[in-house]
Length: 267
View 1: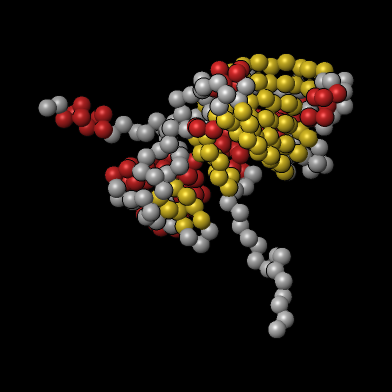
View 2: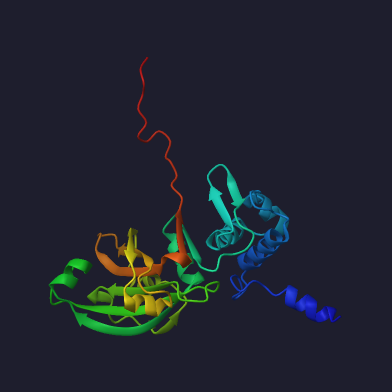
């Protein structure tokens, strides 16, 4: 028996987590291994962020990002005042996006890779002007591509990006992108994104979309539109992504502001 071969094959890091190995990734891999081994069974609570900091000698932000990684893999759910609960023993083959704040969009962009497949400046018509809140005749930058995640064998979505004419000369948006497009806008032009509006719809995939996503024709999909706005509430970037229903899930956390909306009752 070749124990060396068995050891190396059984201890290979999960491909959903490998990539650069920053500290939070190492912690996420350790927790994933412990979940898969049964140390933390389904329904069990993971250590709190404070406990993880003590056990591993890491910062609070490192512990938080590690747990976020497990949430994105569909292994853990987080609930206010409850903690992080194990909900699956192995990572999903698709992609689960968890959003609690705008900064999570940066995390999503770094966990996945957007492969730009076409880029062109477009003089928009009346219909396109309504879509991007512009005026017919303006020249916007239009990008198309597919986004991939380490744990997903197929693309997780097809994406259309529209960038305001002020930013159409942006550099570096070609091939695979490992960061957020709106972050590149902020870095190159000094613009600041202060809000993101999001709309989600259920749709049927077109034949072209199904072919690009490598799924069956006529299947269900999730249409996600995000509008990135600056401090003047102007649209800087419009991103429309279409995901196949079977390989993408979306989760969000809504936190109640106690006292807001409450009504006093007089007896």
